[in-house]
Length: 252
Image 1 (cartoon, one colour):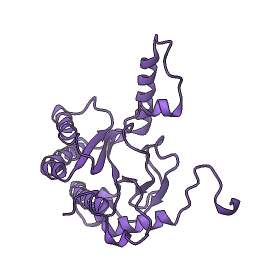
Image 2 (cartoon, rainbow, N blue to C red):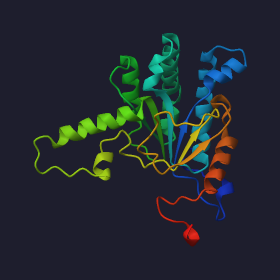
Image 3 (tube, rainbow, N blue to C red):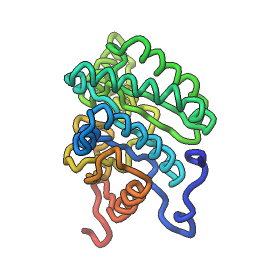
């Protein structure tokens, strides 16, 4: 397997536009994939992990530096306990099976979201994955687990308020100052946010960070997502004109 972030696809050589620096993906459709095949929902989640492995590999080969995936939301606690336990188990299995390889491939793993309330074994595994890959810088994989953007912003606001309490020399509040209290403070904002399964919403994912991201909604269910779908998403991204509040060529 090519090492993520080190071997851009040859098709991007010769003056072709580079891949977006940071792609974020809402991995949706596991349950519908399983239902369509007459399988239990857990089978869809298991195949979703395989899709994640394919996507991490493809992202690195295509020149993407940062990949953020939405794995488990703060709202997912409302699902049946058995399904929640399966999702926890799949995270454990993914890290335990892939951590050594990802570490050797130069991948840095970050897990964003609320740590409080996670089972002790999951929290310990998350800490281990981050610690063992902290020195890597070839490719950056961020897993949003027990994550909700409103919760993240609330926690950031509370942390900022605590930092300025009783401090007359505190830095005035600004976008830059506030961003340093977000879970994503060490990574750039996403250029492209993809949601699979054909749903047209971002479901409390990176609300602050995706303010100027290009949004792309694709019909494929997550377990079927592959390199070709990612290449297509990048191609469609390059058809967009990113203005960041300014005007385009010719004043349009």
